Length: 170
Image 1 (tube, rainbow, N blue to C red):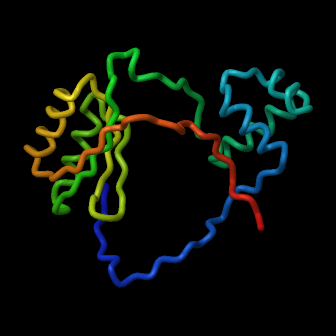
Image 2 (tube, helix red, strand yellow; image 1 turned 30 degrees about the horizontal axis):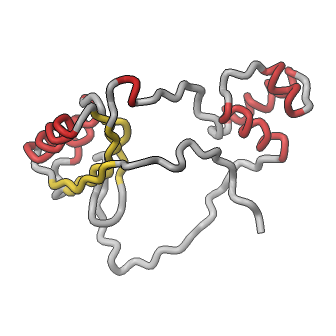
């Protein structure tokens, strides 16, 4: 089952550090450069951080093998593709319909992300739609599947795509 529902009302949560891949300063520079431009050649990446192309290639390979670098891609703007409205939909369910929700989210155009979450909702969807009418259709489909939804339309996005680096050691 894609989602699990647990009663956490009597559980005290504490922060635990998970084992992390140890990055040195050069690894962090590599990640910064690749997150800003994943199309860099190994030669150019090496020039920017002061290493040879083979040395950078080996470091990038290790980052990939460790699961730090998951892949390379293109960021696509939704508005030029006719999807002017972004929204987050919090989905509540009874726990029985989770496979139907995941199946629907995978098959439905405009659903960009699907996250299992804690709190009042069991799932959070990020969607990009052409207009409010299309958003209303999405919500209607979810309601028809037996879900209750809370929706927030994005007014602006002051921060998106921030570089991700490991937490600083104390």
